[in-house]
Image (tube, rainbow, N blue to C red; front, top):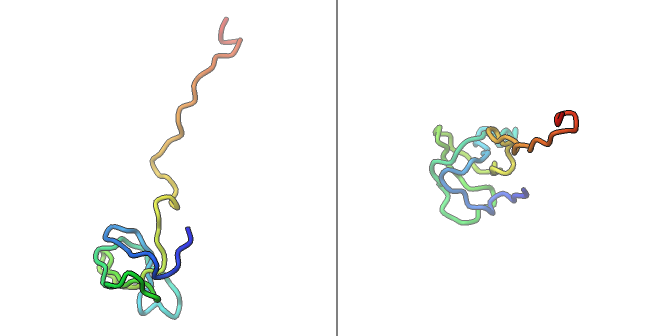
Length: 89
């Protein structure tokens, strides 16, 4: 998914990667779930400021969407059993 910083408004419950102020220079991102959105504007050029559920505050740099994640508890659909000629003896 292409995401331009500041264009998608975060909602509580969204899984995001944020840049904390202390990490702006290094570019290190912290992943978490949005608790509160602290920026009121629908667009913000440096990323919307949010508070994560663990209390960390930073600007959203990326969204972690469900479709981008590996399915953890999904199994492949069952394959129907077709007997071979040897099984039909």
